[in-house]
Each structure stands twice: as C-alpha cells, then as structure tokens.
Length: 61
Image (cartoon, rainbow, N blue to C red):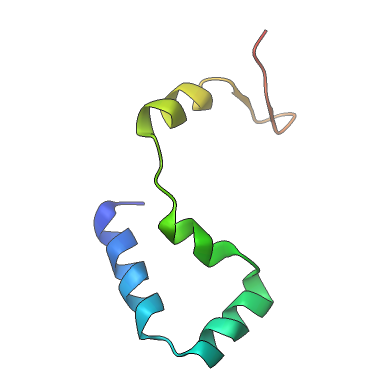
C-alpha cells in the first residue's frame, strides 16, 4: 500500500460516523487499528526473507 492510499483510507475512516464504524468493526473486527500502526520498513523487509508461505510461518534455520 502506498502512502497516498493509506492517507485516503484514513480520510474515509474519519468521515464515517460512529454507527458506520461500529458496523465495520462488527464485520471486520479490529482491522481499522492497522491504520494507526507505524511499520518499521527495515524490520518488515528482513522478516519477509524468513517467511515460509508453504507452512504460513517464519523459518529461521
């Protein structure tokens, strides 16, 4: 996701009233909290190298 798309998602979220947000939470749980998380790009790139998609886990051996 690009920075512009993230900004656009945050703007959309801010425009919704509490009722719409609650409906979203009921359907998608805590997904909106991801909008506020700061991602360490270097750490993320390092972890991706160890992701084993076959077993859906990290492999460090």
